[in-house]
Image (cartoon, rainbow, N blue to C red):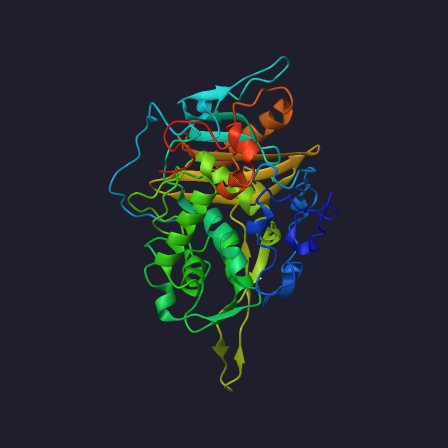
Length: 424
C-alpha cells in the first residue's frame, strides 16, 4: 500500500495518513505531473499562506483514506449560497425510467438494496430525493435511491470543476486578479473574498474553492483557463469521459442555471475520480487555513497584507453545534442553492473500508439535515459492507473501458437505458 504523510495542518488528526487511491484510468491518459511540479509531491504549504491545525475536537478523529491493491486497469476511479429565481422548480417525483449506467437497477425509481443474511436494514428516516452508498475502491454500489435522477447539483459540481482543472497549473502559479475575472458571478453566491488587483497563488484559489466554496475563486481559475465558456466545455467533456451521462454543466461553480443538472451517481463518479489526485485529497480534507487579505497602506505609506482565517463548510469535516466530526471523514464537497436544496458527497474510511456517500435535496428542512442523513448512510454502509449484494457499480472512464476489451465484452461499461454508456 502506497501512503502519503499529509502535512499536519491539512488533516484533522495527529497521526493518521491520507493515502493514495490507485488510479484506475489507463496509463496513457493518466496525468502524472502538473506543470513541472515533479509529480505533485511538493508539500501543500507552498502557497502564499500557511495552513493551520484543525481544532482539538477534530484532531481526535481519524482522517485516512486507504487504497486497495488494484490492477492497472481496475475500476475508476459547491456550498454555493446562491439565491437566484430558477425558471422551473424540480419535480418531486423521479422519472419512471432513468439511465442504466452502472446497472439496470440503478435506473429504476425508488430504493435499491439487496440485503443478504445478517445485513442491517436501511435507516428509516431518510428524506433525500436521491442518494447512493458505494465502495470507493471496488466501485460496488451497496444501496441507492433514485441514483440517476437528474437534479440541480449546487456546489457539489465544483468536484467536477476541480477534477477537470487541478492538473493545469503548479500551485505556486500566481494570478493578479482583473476586473473581468470576477464578471458574471451570480447574485447571492458564496465568496471567499477575492479582491481585484490583488495577486493570489493557484494554491490560494483552490483552498478558496474547497473550503469556502468561493464562486469568485472558481471564476478566477476559469479566467486562467481562457474563460467560463471554455471551462464549461472542458467540464462537460470530462464528464463524458467519466461516463457521467446525467450531467450537463452550464455554470462551472454550480450556480443555479436552466438546464444544469447532475445526479447522485455522477457526483459520486466525480468524487472518486478527484480523490485519485493528491492535491484534491489534501484540499478536500483541509479544515481551516489562512487566506490572503487586502493590501492596505498606513499613514507612512507602508503596505501590509494581513491574512484572515477560512474554515471548511463541510460540517462532517469541521463539525457544528448539532453535527459532530464524522469518524474517518476525508472530504469531499457540499452545496446549497434554492433550486437544488442541500447536496453533499462525502468519503470516509473505517476498518479498512472506504465508502462514498452522496445525498441530494433532503425534504426534511432541518438544520444540517443533509449531513445527518449522510452520517446515517455511512453508519449503515460500514455495518453492511460484506453483507449486501451490490445493486450496481461505479463505471470506469471511457478510455479505461476502451483499453480493456475483456471488460467491454463483459458489459462492465454500464448497462442499458437512458444514457446507455454515459451519453445524454
